[in-house]
Length: 340
Image 1: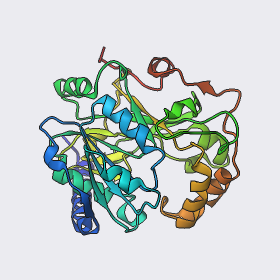
Image 2: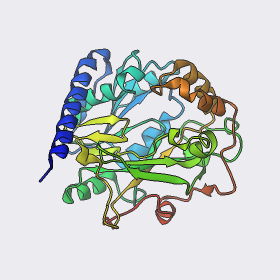
Image 3: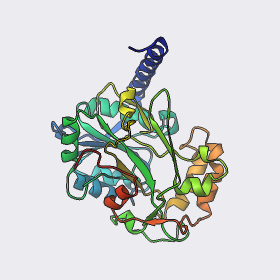
Image 4: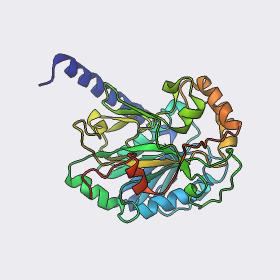
């Protein structure tokens, strides 16, 4: 039986979830339809929801990757792109597209827009909530479609699967590589940090909090607690009453965050290969420093953006070459759990 303190916490979180849902309802008026193909969504179809801005270079492979995994429909919000992203997405037969010029930061970094769209179109579906620089891999992703995984999760009565964000980077100074649209980003960003990760459980949401990797090592070595959060729960059997609290780092109701085993065993998990460090990162970092749309206290991250603009080399002698999901599992970065 829950004690009084726990009951009070549960009540406050329920109120918080309802406020976030109402906030998304109010923000729906900020979205304008570009192409609505949601009538194509079929029962059991796996969806993906993404907010983008100026990602025309990255999107061809992003779409290819998720189509190959088995995503059947994409819900995109374009937030003021000027590079052809809107036109590219509007031409895709499996994409429904909305646009807005409103503040990304003041929409909870796009969560308000996606919460509304998923309430309308993703209820009862397995849904991925992603950034355009994230490529999901999971055990057997090269031989088993997402539907095989979600069928198994349904059988196990598991509502969500976690995936740690794994920063991928090149060898050599950032911005000096060559990347062609449609190319697999891991051909350019072939390295990652296999260790130096910190992990702890957070209350009251009961989610894991993971930090570390090259950004912590290079840009936040003096204050690692300020480094980016890497834990995410991107794959959820969505319900219109659900809501993400902060990116996909944590969700409500909080049972969606209990994606780990506290008894010494392992539960299934994947990785989000983070392709932020493609050559365009240098120019984008300079722009984002001026826009101040990606952090609540953006001025605190000016040094971070300045560091990226200076074209650092993230590679070090301890860097690990990417060799696929089985190698990542052997390193303890992801797990098959009971899915064999």
